[in-house]
Amino acid sequence: MITSAAWFVLTGGVGAVLVPWWLTGWRLRRPLPYWSVAEAVGILLIVAGLIPAVHVFVQFVRAGGTPMPGAMTGRLVVTGFNRHVRNPIYLAAITIFVGEALLFGQLSMLLYAIAVWVGAAAFVRWYEEPALAARFGAHYEAYRRAVPAWRPRLCPWTPDDLGTRDDGTGAGI
Image (cartoon, rainbow, N blue to C red; front, side, top):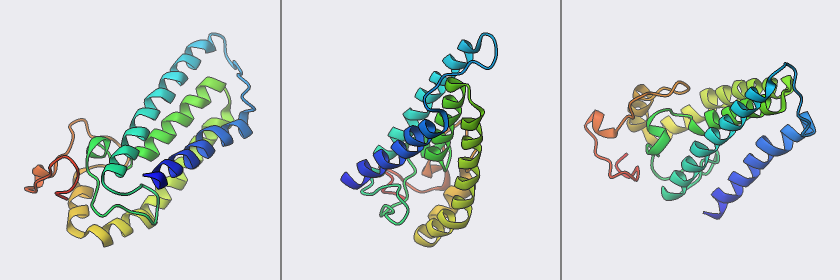
């Protein structure tokens, strides 16, 4: 649990606090009239991004691990937001960064969000997916076929969809 909490604080602190501070200096700009509407949407996106980020970290702790690369859980975590999309933490981070771009009214934050998505997509494709396939085999491949990587499903996937049983903790997969 301490490792997950430290990883959450480190990655969240650097990605959502330190880098945006470097890019914006916390200066709010209003590039267009009525930008306050965009700022309000930005705040909503930041809050909306925090919810899955925190929830998924909790799911990993409950599964006895962390989402930190190199410290995988002993079982495939397919609960909560992971039932809708395979990369909920990355999507949550990108949502937060787009929210910050709107809040601060700065293009640099939008470019940062795009760069993070490109980096995350490459990391997922060339490291995470092969590592998960090697560790969890057919279970991961079934999950990968059923749950999109970047576009959330409207209806949550359950392992029962493939004839497996899951008690809600991810232990069945």
